[in-house]
Amino acid sequence: MRQHKVYKHETKGYYAVKVGFSWYGFFFNVFWLIFKSLFFWLSFSIIVLTIFVGFSDGLVGKALSLYSTKDWSLVIVFISIPLLIGFKGNKWVSRNLENKDYKLIQTLPAASKKEAIILTQNEKSNQKPTFAAWGLQDSYQPAHRHIEKEK
Image 1 (cartoon, rainbow, N blue to C red):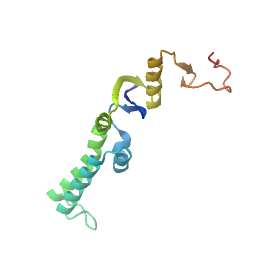
Image 2 (tube, rainbow, N blue to C red):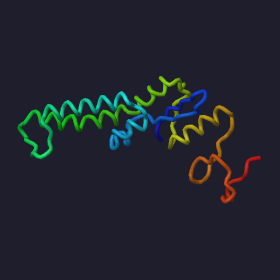
Image 3 (cartoon, rainbow, N blue to C red):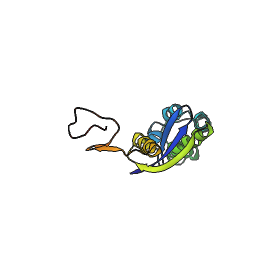
């Protein structure tokens, strides 16, 4: 199970952040940064890429030279930006939430963000979570006869 940090805001409720590598941040870096409201890091990565593309005359319309330092620096930057976002992205999200007055409640192992939030809410209310055959059950579903309705 993955570790998740669960935060709580007084008016906005709970929010969970996975601890570790962000695969969505790695593959969809620009869109992920926009979706997570990490505009400082979005502008930083765009500025760095713009500087290096201008510095190396771009790669459009020409072959990559194995002996050109400019071309290799551009390749290294294009590889390192997604890696940086993947390794540091969830830490940036946690710091961004703390800056928006979210309070860290706990860090716990859970299969998903939703399950981490449910486990945190159940600990707060001293209720036992109901488990079904597929995992944590957060509400009664009458179609499942093997789950008894709580009274």
